[in-house]
Image 1 (cartoon, helix red, strand yellow):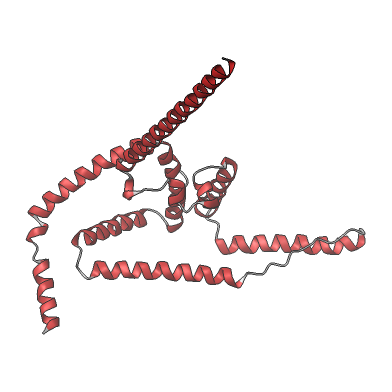
Image 2: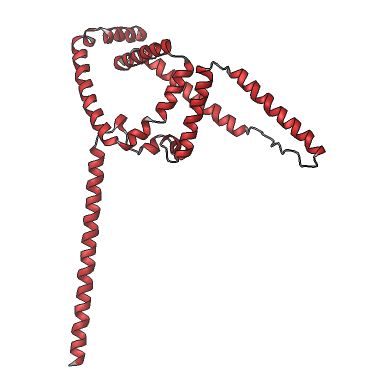
Length: 254
């Protein structure tokens, strides 16, 4: 009798374990389904410029992205404060770059020279001046990256000038026109400072309110496409640019 009870309790425990395993498996499957549904829903959300990665990865990741997105507020504030001080020094006080560099070098060399000579009389150790050497690999990588960007810009200019994409041509002309107006009103240093400030404020604000911004951008893009369709139908389609390109291609073939 006792052996029969032990066998029944053992069977009950096995059945309970099987049910619990099935339940955990079903719950994990449901969690996976929920995660896949969430990912699918997120992929359907409109993002500016077709962005699929987080803002931090779009900015390249690493320390530069941390500074731009204010991951370390002290470092980001220091960088922005230093840029503001330089802009105020050069633009407001009209201090010249060469003059500033010369004054800094004069003061630094004078302090180090006096310190080195005074250390002999005061029986103290002279200042340890580090030996600074620019690595060749760093210079080559910078030159290579600069060459790639210049070639990319030249390729864009060539593509726009070839007359194949009217939409891109109008966008570039509009951008250059706006830039010329800004250049007429502000100096190069002020424009650079404005871009620097925007780079340290817009991404972090966008990261905090990206859903609202993307929703507004989606509505704006829909409206822009509607207006461009009207412009294309009434004006751009009447420009015989495609006929001219066809004649040029035919003449080249001949």
